[in-house]
Length: 137
Image (cartoon, rainbow, N blue to C red; front, side, top):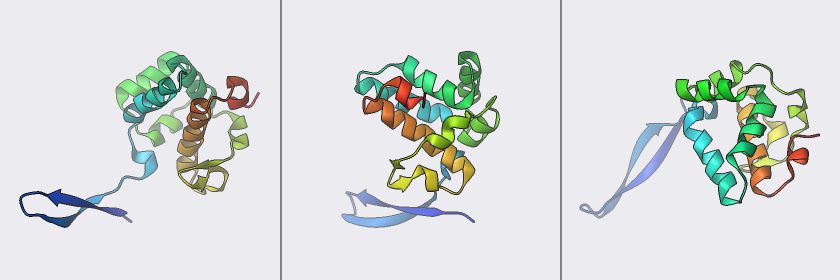
C-alpha cells in the first residue's frame, strides 16, 4: 500500500494553488546519510558536539566509527542501517517519550520505532541532558 501526501504549490504566474501528488516515503526508507548531518546540526546549534551524536548512534547500534562511516558512504536507508547494525543495545527498550507527537514506546512497527528511538536520543542531547542519562547508564 502506498501512502500519498499532497503538497500545495503556489504558481505566481497563474495566481492559484494546485495540488500535486507525490509518494511519501516510509520513515525507514529515508537515507541515513541524509539525516545524519541534520542530527549533527541540531546538536551543534545547542552547543553539543558531533562526537556526542556519534557516541549516541554507536551506543544504540553497536557500530564503531568506521562501520558507521561505511553505512553513510553506502547511503543506506534506515532499515538497512539498523539491520546491518552489529547489535541493537538492549537498553533501547528504556527509551520513552514523545517524538513528533507519538510516544516512541507505543510504536508498533519495529523499524519505525528504532528510527524514533534515535530521534528521541538526539532530542534529549539537544535539550541538554547529560550523556549518562541519555545512554541510560
